[in-house]
Every structure is written in structure tokens, then in C-alpha cells.
Length: 397
Image (cartoon, rainbow, N blue to C red; front, side, top):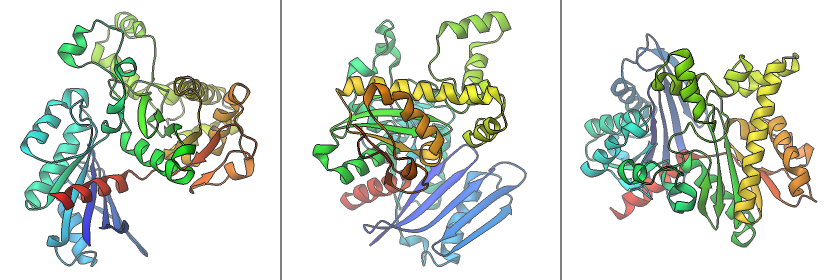
């Protein structure tokens, strides 16, 4: 038996889950929010208990020190020596990392070198590793990359039609993100359906950020996010794909820098930008019920873009065995799932069982018996993938 921790360190948050491996039993989970602000929030959950608190969390080191203290105080572990390995979510691994990797000085330097491509995420991810290295220097630590799953794409899918010198000099290409989630969800679908009945899958990771992946025989052949997570479908606050000339045009008209325009496309666009209500689909659906036309337009635009991406991936895959919904919107919004599937019903003969589609928070097939493509809701579990990869590398190390 080994105790493995999955750690996701964000800019102002830290999320952890502790597993007993190889049984994959969840021992506890913890969430630290508002790190660096005046008052921080802690949520610590055990199998039969949930503890919340407000404390000062000036930095990630303090948050992680509290986490380790809570693990011992609540008897999750008898001492810190019980922790065998720690897996860290790393958003960007570039082209080099096609799989998770044991942390070394070289891996750390490579992640740091990619900060320009993931300035909001890689520094925070590295911070979690460095704090743990200081506090638990003898524990095996593993980098689990969001980009790794997508490295099976061929150049025809990952290259951009710009002068090739920019790829050669700066590695400007499609990388894709949410890979750990796409890996988990498509692996579950292949386990449920059998490999022969799940050769062509389309995974829809729909949350405040969102991406789709086309997966053939377990390998990603295309994904909607690109050089950065700004590309692809319309999202909560991100524009997704737009005519790039718009950015230069707005920069001139509004006298704004390229950085400011990119910031607008990342933080003030998407569902929020169109609706002017919220980036949260729950708020959008409530506003629609109250007759808000801008909210209705925002949802319709979102649905159309997801449906169009699914259609393009069916074409690339040469058909589709199953469409998979996951993440916050994908798992919880039955109306968005229905609207997306309805938008492609005439073209592809895929239909839902409305009763099954109304269910929430469970793994379930929601397509009708006569649907030409199966449709599933599969709750994602990125923490488990991180723990699995960490345990595997710890075991052979």
C-alpha cells in the first residue's frame, strides 16, 4: 500500500486529494482558496466529515503546511513519512513531454522555460512543486502534463498555416489542454464500451474553460484548444476562435496594446462578453428563464460552436462511436447537452433519451435506443489520473 497525493496548485488556490494506492481509495480532499488575500478559505473533506474554516493564507507554503498538519491531526496519515509520492498538475509541457515525468532539475527547468506559453498556470504549478520539495525533500514528485495527451496529433492537425519558420524558431503550434481530463474520460468510455466499439470518440470537456478532442483508438488526433487555451470553442470568458484581424483592428480603434486586447479576449469575452450577465452557465440559464435575450444569444452561440466542432471531428474520424460530455457544464447542464445534440441530430442521427439526460452527477449513457451515435455523461477525475501516473512512476523508481 502507498499513499499518493494529487496536487493542483493555482495562482490563488491549491487543491489536493490523497489516495491509497493501488486500491485508488480516496482518503481525503482539501481545497485552499483566496491564497494571498486578506482572508483565505479552507475546505477539508474526509469520508464522513467536512470541515471548513477561514484563516490567513499569505502564500502557498502556509497553505501546504496547514494541509500537511491537517492530514496528521485528522489521522489520515500517522506521519508525513507515510506519503510516498506527490503528483503535480502541470498545464504546459510543450512538445518534449508526451507522458508524465519524475521531477528532476531538467524537468523543472523545462517547465520554467515554458512559462511564456502558460504565464498564468506554469508558475503556480511550479510553486506547488517547490514548496513540497522544501517541506518533503525525500518524497517522489511527478509532473503530470495537461498537454501530454495531445502530443499524438500529427503535423496536419497541430501545425498552423503561417510561415513555417515561426514553428521552427518559436514552436508555434497547437498544443491542446485539459489532456488529463480527456484521457480519463475516453479511457472510461473504452472500458465501458470495449475497444472495438469505441474506436472513434469525441470528448467534450465543457466548463468555464472548454475543449473538445477527437480520439481514435485511444489517441488524440485533434483538439480544439491551440497554442494557448484561448483558442477553440467559445468559453465562459474566452472568445475562442475569432478572425485574428479583429485584434489588430480593435487595437488601432481603441488605442490598446496587443497584450490588453488579448486580455479582453481571455477575460471579458465569451459567454460573459455576449450576455453581459455572467460567465457561469447556471446564471445564463436563470437569465434566459427571466427573458434575457442577450443571455439566450450567448447560449445559442455556445451551442452552435460546440456542435460545429463535433461535426468537424466526426468528419475527421470518419464517423463516431460515442460523444462524451464532462466537466461543469457537460456533467450538470441537461439543457445545454440537449441543445448541442439537437443541433447535430439532422446531420448525424444522434438523439437523446430525455429522461436519462435529466439525471445529474453520475456516469450514464443518455442517448436513445435508436440513436446512431452513443452519448455518455462521464464525470471527469483528473486527480485520479495524476495519482495513477505518480504511483506508476514511484513504483518503478
